[in-house]
Length: 321
Image 1: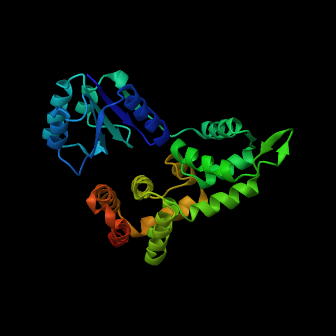
Image 2: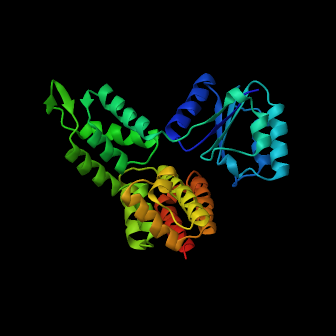
Image 3: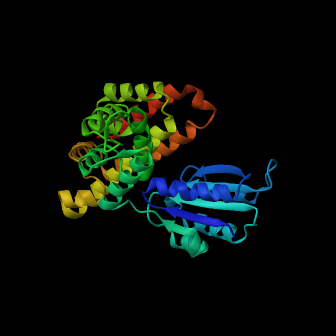
């Protein structure tokens, strides 16, 4: 049996695990499904159908936490147990658990949960990255990066890789290029103006014109619509966590917010603003809407990308009260 479950909010390590499966199953035809958008029957049909173009097949199911109905779970579990050796199923979720029957159907060795890094691990990851690129970086500068970049290695790698191209190469200390805090603030602050996270900030306050403008700028800069949607999905999942925190405790102190990955002052302001406009049900609806538009933007309708993104953002803002 070749089935895998990769869970958790640490997107970079989870992507590495998925890529390792792809590498070990090279030459396979790949299909991607989004739970909640397609039925379990559609997924199992794909698993059972022989490819016309390759001997092997990889089926990836994202948002697997949405597979909750008993009949769908039973269909999928039965299919997993009957899969042949030329088929691989990978269930992905940013949550830390799936339905127990799905979990039990996959060998323990093939199940992994990728948690967000501890603070000390994030600092060390950044230091190691810049060291490999020929730079030294102090704690003050790593703190700037962690303040302005989303808390996972995929985002850190993306932004740090961009930084390497812009940092001065002629400013050395003991023959090693060093990273300057002012350079980081200048570049990363500029970059945030064109990120999904600043877009979320504008959505959180209901600023339609600035939200549409931000999306247009990102698309014009060749940022993929899928990456924008992935960033917004992360933000709305964090909003769900924040709203649950408010419901359970009545308030959210700095310690509790840090536990759910919202430690920067700007992030706190954004989610406080979002909580004024969105209920828990609204946030869940926004996640479903994001999954819907992710499918649309991978279909032939993607030729109308700018129009679809405008509609998507308007519907997100309309979903708030």
